[in-house]
Image (cartoon, rainbow, N blue to C red; front, side):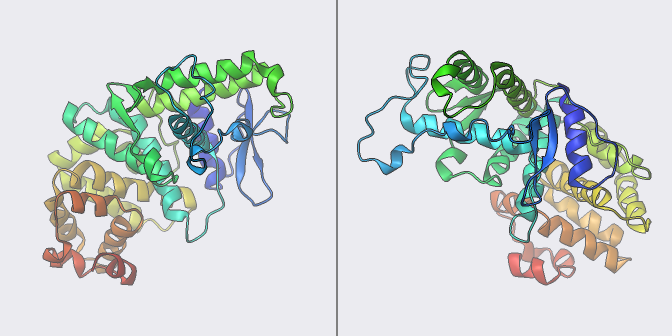
Length: 357
């Protein structure tokens, strides 16, 4: 399965692009009763990718004074306890949920955008040669934190993993997640008869789930080709900045007014649709994460360029500050007081003022 094709289909449905569906090997999107969309096995409308392991969720040991059972895979991972097992399950569910399309409301819209954004950026980082190793690691930790945070997961899960090179590791046990998920799927495939009352899929379907989970994980850790946002008429410049982090960084520091000019050209284009808006939001958060993350004062150059058109400056500033909370985290890390940037604050709308002032 090519994850890029599946990602294109995800964006096609999520943003109502109206493009013909592309048949993937094992899965296809189907609408659910709540107007969300999930990946289902081809030809099986009642069995989804996300649900196959749902009935296999480990019992929560936090509700038992002295848990007296062993983790399912304790024979394979001797340092694993029942608390760790549940955390690893939560990670599996989070990864598998990446390609789900949820019905948006005012309470989940920001989290949905941020999780999708972070997943996409995690696939980009390994290929960003204009970042040094320290910068890549900083951003990888940053994006992975928000990928989990906006899912959301509990606090224990949020801080349980770390990157070791291009491997995601459960820090406490040193279990490599690629290995763990391989053993996990293989176990259920080989012992399917024990779970006939719980699992209603065939071994080859478990293998398909394993393959997709591993593709998602390998994309997160940078072992797979980077994903790209698919083309759209009139978005060539914006998409090039989004799909090539090196190009964005190079062009910005070579001629930042050219990058600002691309933002201006987008705002001057009357065409609007959900996908175009998503791409512009993504570009602005790229500016936050790849430029302001390392040099926050660069925001002054953005305001100086756009202040002659106050309505556009207001649009950009408020998207930067209210579409996501990345910039909030960056300011907190660097002890930046936004009130010292009066030229920025003057463009805040009511929502931005409520959050930051």
